[in-house]
Image 1: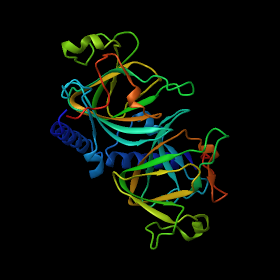
Image 2: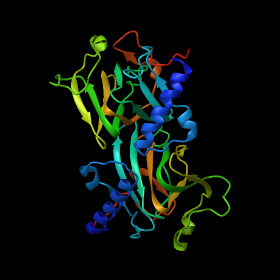
Image 3: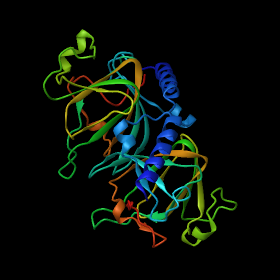
Image 4: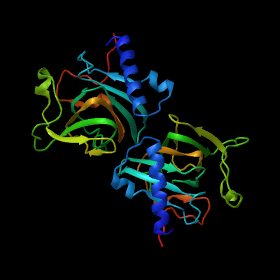
Length: 180
Length: 180
């Protein structure tokens, strides 16, 4: 990604947070994490994140999704014998989120995946999250999600985040952004 | 507390959450935790809490404070050898919160404590939290807080909550509510 693209995406994320009436500091706005997972297709596949706190016991983030933006399928594997992998609770604050987890495939799902990406989306049980709804995902569970047409803001409460160890179904993906 | 007082307090809390544009489900609204700490003086000293998630790894709550309501001084002690006591991050979402922690006493603090309660408030270093501000409290650290004149909403992200083991400076206090 180019630094200008990252700045543009941060502005859009800040705009959605404002719409959701979620206050962030100017410093947080300047540091919004922008990931395109190396695909160079941020509008369709990407993640915009304000990390509030991440320590060795718990983590809290605000995840911002642009309209119809997808966070691709992944899981959080165990980190050594003592730590069973990140467990996380998603709570919708604004917009609508379509979350997919293992289980019987939901007929007529609401998410729309561009054709070229479809082989890397394997779990198909749909959970619809509207403001006030939440879902807790067990450790090491495959999942992916997409925002509805207005975009979305999702609070994530979890055990410690170790983004660099996430396992992506599409082996090309990289969680940590590369800046040109 | 009488059940009618609890219901009234829940309504006020739901009103403040609405003002703060924080969505909760009808079920959550019916289950807002109301604590008066056994003092029977909820308007001055009390806590209204929506528990989003509390598991053996992390916890997330929305704390609602009525105008000038005080959460009295306490700490979260270690829970056995492996667990150093609850660590928590407070993030202000709405209104203003005056948080007090160990350290040099702040001159002209903004909190106002009714005279009869003052002996049980011993830490006096002030941290002012406005929307978007946050503060992480180390385990086992004395603290107390009061909302400003508009009331406040405070997100709490933390390690596992074990409210029943909290240690209160005022030995009369009880965290878990008694319902008449």
